[in-house]
Length: 211
Image (cartoon, rainbow, N blue to C red; front, side, top):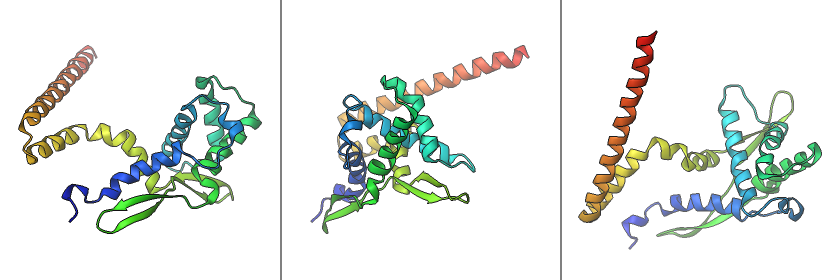
């Protein structure tokens, strides 16, 4: 019989599968990879995903290879890498077409679905389409959005909810000692939030009185 805590285990593994597709990327170009120190290109790939997400979330805004290339030219100096326009275009195509789109080849990751057995999950973070001007543009897939939101946005929005969930699980599992510690952490977070609100009220109250 499957343990209750392993229910929907495949949802947990999806996050790992996406990370694996980036860190252990296929179709690697050793010449381009050699331009960067260890882990730097991982950071750049995630940065490109952030850029695509931010640009395409803006109304009527599209994201082309040229847009991504301009973005790369802006951040590469932070890695002490300086490329010509042609070299940047080559790097852009490598990151988008070879890595993130896996040269249009199907990429899967093995995930255990307890009670059913091992299954394969498709990994695809970005998709392309052709706009009215017959130009290829890029956007995140639902899987891509899910991954990106979980790396930052969801954590920021649900920080209190996550701490509350941890407390509920501790109590459910009768781990009262850690539950007390978790309660103290929630109180600390609430006190900090209250202090932030007081500072906000003081700051903007003073500005309003001066106007």
